[in-house]
Image 1: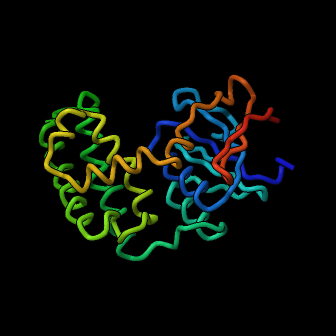
Image 2 (image 1 turned 135 degrees about the vertical axis):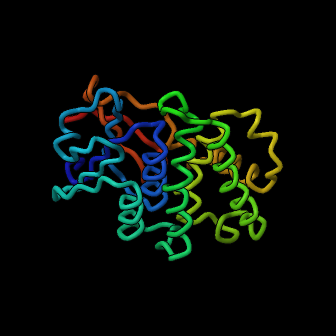
Image 3 (image 1 turned 60 degrees about the horizontal axis):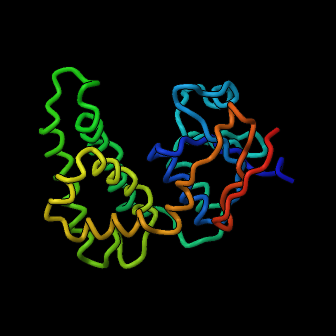
Length: 222
């Protein structure tokens, strides 16, 4: 029965929600996905998590997990798939991504939202982090070896956002390993699956039975 499945509030284009959806899929979880708009958040989501950010995972017993890394860790801990728990080194790299790099990404991509912000300075600071990733990728093609890890899935949606800000500039940079890594993840069946467009739950009442076999199918909501 669908009532025994977790509910996932998600916004398709949010990188935090992207990495949560990827982990849930990879680890074989099925959820009742409720697609939302951040400018029109449903009351049910805000009741579960008043901070109003995605992802929000509501487990059948009522437990709420409303941080993307925590959703990923729950998926790894309780699922059956290729991801293994975070190492300290992975956690440190993700913290650098989520902290300083995200700070520069926001002020580069959305410079007009911040006072006295020099977008080029923040682009340069973000590029320094990306150059470090490019060097790391020379080893095996992924951030921690030959196979994608928890860290690859946690970080790549944010590098994708950085590229979107100025794609011609980004693609012209001498980051051969990084470009190949990013293109590979963006072209993967997993990313294609998690980036499908779904009906807005608040408008339609339709949930999506999402995950597990990578073959989402729409069903009526509660």
